[in-house]
Length: 68
Length: 144
Image (cartoon, rainbow over all chains, first blue to last red):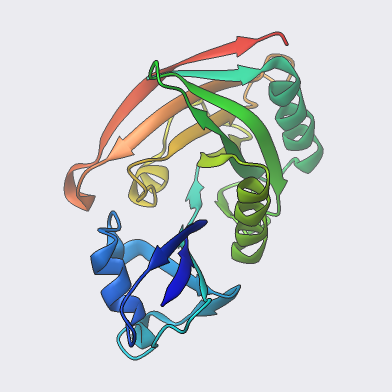
């Protein structure tokens, strides 16, 4: 099935979870990544159970913060 | 790595950061990674600091996502973020280092310590939490 990952179309296996996609894409420092699917944020404790669907639009975001 | 930012973008973030005082201000940067290894900032985003303090910043994740979508629509690459230090120098604080977890990002820090002479520097941060390595990058402000 075709999904969009970080702006690029990818052909991925049916039944792929968010966690499996993170691994497949070799995302840097995955423990700090926030994931949105179709502009909805996915709780990190759902990464293993959230199954991606045909046409999904996935973005990987890093928390952006700091202090003086 | 050499990083280019337009004078107009530098002026834009300075104006915004000054207008947000006494709080820290923040945003994102987008552009292109050129084949010659130079990172060119083409667009800056002024985003909301949800912390609303002079000691911390957190970029609103929904605004972050909307900005990323805008970058993609314009054919730009997300390059990192910028934030201001209202009273301290332009260098990553311990908290900045701890929360810098994207090894591909450029982190711009604008010091307003000298209000009339804002200082902007660029940094690369990577490594494990107990041994974050910070490298100052060459930042060049260019006139279009």
